[in-house]
Picture 1 (cartoon, helix red, strand yellow):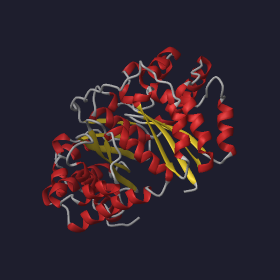
Picture 2 (cartoon, rainbow, N blue to C red):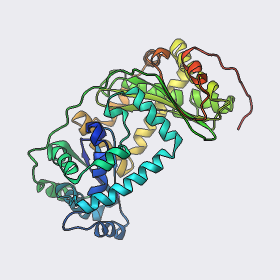
Picture 3 (cartoon, rainbow, N blue to C red):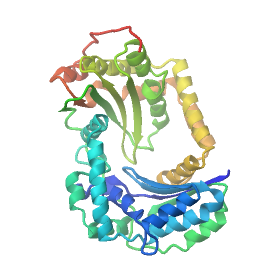
Picture 4 (tube, rainbow, N blue to C red):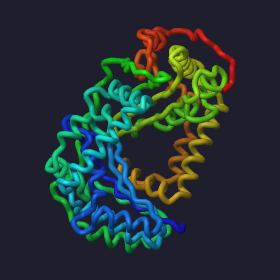
Length: 407
């Protein structure tokens, strides 16, 4: 490849924060790009702009990643900068105040998105009293209270070499890059976080009434963690439910019933827990029917099982996604780094494909059977009609409106 991708994956994310310090990982993501005592934020930006490279970061529930993608010849420059940011970030008080204002604006932007708000409320229901149920950005109150010393303490506790995986992919001289890594000092006080499994959901429905054109609905279920034997079956189940244009939910809710423009499902997997969630935006008049159809299709899959064609389509899509991503240096770098972070080794493509191909129709039925009406959680944002969605979700309501119009 002409390109190279480098990434420092730190095994600490928003689930490793207390409620009072929520958003610390994301705050650190911002602050590291303010540079070091020897490298300003402007100089950092100019270095990557000059070579047409991309340098960025993102925060998840369980890790934070700092990465660069650029031409392979420029990889040593990227490695030097990224390593310096991890080794000795400035973490200046004035930068903390600047980024506090920026993150406050980011929080405001996030709260203006009703679909994001719906997912956030749903996560809080699914993972109560747990950082897994909180947004990675934190809250206005927690961001306002974070001090430079608190952020520095979190950095010192988790940003040591024993808790970092570096991924490198592309056409670079890897030996030269590894030599730079070997120069990184140890941080003896840092450690791998100890995580508590979140308790079971207590409440099952939450609505936030607001004046929007649509009701934004998120509903779903708790799943096992990433080592569960059915993990590949859950991936197939997710895809045939709402992962593609041929999925059951897209075909019925959008194509046949014309009740929504956007409807899909997603699967999240963590160390000791997971989730499968269905998201849809629809008019208030159709919200009840959309909710009822989602559960009706899930229950139909659990009772009757999938068709051979559905399973073949889902497997083919997941296979292609894996193989196509291997041709992109950034995706390949992210894959190998996360594999080591999560599993301690990089599984081969053949291993993953074998696991995928071995999924049976009975396993998909078994996975779908875990998505029961008596364990579903749901959140809605918009002009929600009181009691109507709860009735559709929890009382086995049949769909009352069946439009055959096509969008």
